[in-house]
Length: 118
Length: 99
Image 1 (spheres, one colour):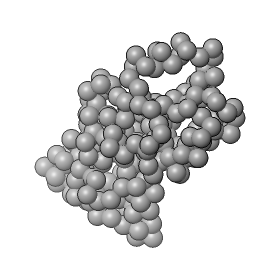
Image 2: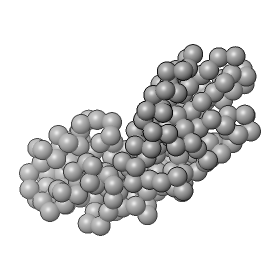
Image 3: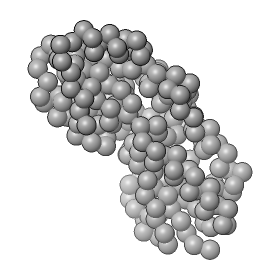
């Protein structure tokens, strides 16, 4: 088993990155790998509650984050600095995450076998 | 002139360049990922808050709602719908979509 990290740095909907990341995460989970998702910079916005995409005609994929647990993807990390810079706190997020400092995030990143960036 | 921005200020310098080059009295419309600059935290970090005194700033509501930011908008920015977007374009003699 290898340690896979998915680094999410983009806001949802404006680009396809957030959705593509989720797709690949689910594939990796199917192959029984050790999967971590991290959210830094604008990627933190992917996890914000109360997303309602009805008026823009795009699928609301934010609900998928809540289903990750069912695929045994339970390691979700958010960088504290990114969250704070955007005026967000843990209670604003859709799912339970572990909030890490930049230094802790750096350590976690360095310990991976494979890092995929979105 | 109407300036239109569709990228997050956390990802590109489009908004920063626009704020530097837009003249007083111009209109600025934030759409898609640029709507984060209309939130309380985003208006500060992007410079939009400081520009409110010299630019008329609008934000596209459907994009705000999609991103779960409706309760976080800063005062002084006017939310508009798609029809309002069309009106803004029609009202201004020219416009610039910053990429």
